[in-house]
Image (cartoon, each protein chain N blue to C red):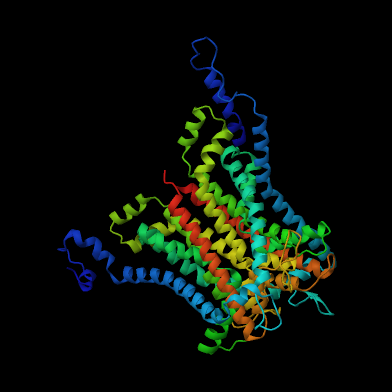
Length: 328
Length: 303
């Protein structure tokens, strides 16, 4: 339906121009779109379209690259055993391919990261959107951008050497080993603050000023306006920010590969070490696994699960963003 | 002058003009504002702690040796020369591969595409989704692609650049689209009214006007690629490289990979080297981000 109406648009324009006043010489004026033929421009348009198509090719490439080895993997290991088995030991003689230990570690680091990133990110967003003057925003936003720009491997180094070794073990005297999902999760949370803050700030800034004025006119102060008017009005955008934060936390690799640990066991507490899905892929890549071997395929089976989770989460986020863009 | 106590118990005789400020000075809104500031403060303190910690730990190893020496089994003789050169190679090739494609894709989507056509909607959805795909998945893709081509040694500059290009392509497309969208349609209408074609308008009016936005977006995207390690790890970049990379098919390692390697060693000396290499990386990123912010503030036109 939609495609039909727009396809007819150029036609409508040309007919409109021919139906208009005629030129003094009596000829009907030439259509706006009937210029000299320019084969060069047709080529350029094709090149541009091909460049845009790279995005689709990439997605298809990812799907094929993940699915083909994963299918090979699931020929050897039943899907049920993979998804619900609680022992992950792909390299042992009595190999076992239950992915739950990896999933629990990912769930712990993600949950801890969100506990840090959501309140702090939303706090920063409300401050920037509802309180800060333009001058202050100009100072604060670059700080958030720098926080987003610190390489994850540096964050990982900091999580291992400072947060885990110095803060958790020396200062707080916590009963934890060389690695923990807590240290990795905390640092990952700080890393995700800019993601949560900038998207929810966009959503809050999109709320019309008239709503705030109405709220103030009814006697609300800024806190009440922020929490009871702006926040609910921007809720779908804020949800999108949180969901995108989840996607970043699940997919983050270097921080967990360095600081969370590398033994795949079911994680039951924040002070334990644990290998996440991304941590496993990074670690397995260090070994030399032949193409086509079960070990190589295992990498892609975990990669497929990771991709499926983030894909689902991303689509939820994209839908939520669309909703708040349409609202106002 | 109302004190905090006054405003807590508003009297009906209170003048209207002070109503606004007094409502903001009750304890709850004040605590709320403090909490908001605190959330930002925690992030800033964390960032400063990280920088100070890295500088203190790595400062002693930050010297000429770091830039001139090759990795070694002893921290006293080790340097990051091949990693620095490798990063330059990979990021350079990534920039050459990605920026033209990203800008072309954005131009197509903003200026030429029929936004309701299924093909263009599919592209749009794909770009949004690809921007949030975990970086390590791009490593899996590059690994599978090179295997398919039958490349035996996958740790080559062009392979790493390919993975990073696909990773930052959506970032460049999104930034370029925003820059193009910010050019007012009057500019296009004026150009078209003077008889220019759609492409001439795009090439001579729209693109030059959006160069600052494209530059800002590209620099930030490249700085992200510079700090990225996960996809390269999958190609096997964690190797002992004791030579300077010298071409597209040359083996390589990069700074983030070198930092990861040194972090994993047991000796304290290597941890100091990791911190010292992190100083280089952080310095480069601050420089790139600063440049991007400078371009944005200095050259971006407000129409």
